[in-house]
Image (cartoon, rainbow, N blue to C red; front, side, top):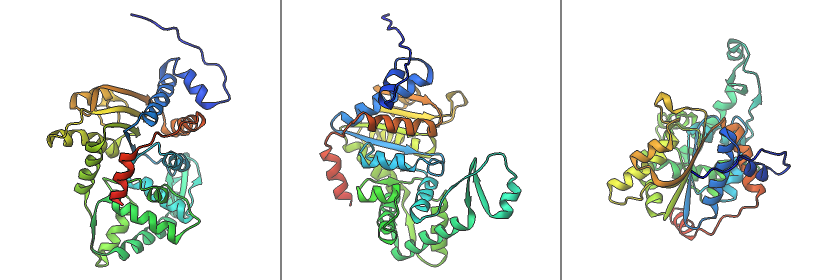
Length: 332
């Protein structure tokens, strides 16, 4: 066994240099540093399609601009998200804000005042319902819509840009860049609530979740290599993971994802998907046997700003990805 000496971290003004140092230390600081190295390799290796899964209340917690930057720099090719994150993202685009609150508070009093709490973030329920109405208004214009969630969110992003041109959001940015955003559990969100409102008014709106699975798997099947980045776990994580299984069933086996990163606070010993290891995923064929992988057990609100800053600070540029560009042009 060849051992390499651990290198103590020294204070460093550049985040990318700091993370590189941390990759030579121990524990979760090391994992955080290693994740930057693996993501950098994904970005710079030709023909790697990068799929990201986004769960947790990341947008209400203030992570929106980090994800917009990741899209703008093409560090993500396909996004799979919870509906809640995209709903809160739409809120910010329209001008509905989230506010600094407290986690030690009388929640009954908040209810009386019409304030919703997400740990230590506050928001007004009547403002959320206003956004529900805006989304329902957009959906009514579509009428007889039946397609994937990615197509619905793409059209919604275009509508947001036209209706609120001064706004800024993950949704509108993705639509502008032709980056698909899938929401496999769309009904489990305020977007789903808005579409129920639309349906009850007599408008036929159908989000085809099977089309989601088929389209997302198609991206994986046509990619030469794939890398995955999971912020949290939940439905977005497994929805991306299962593309490898679907592909193998249809004799389009891709051999598992080639790169894999996860930032999570969930642990494997309870048996849940969000904390299960990539080693476990190898047994399913979801990650390749030679996958370059790292899981950092860390709050994503700590990891994402640091990692995003390190990727941008290092001046990394995305290698040309002509296959993905052509694919997205065809989809659009």
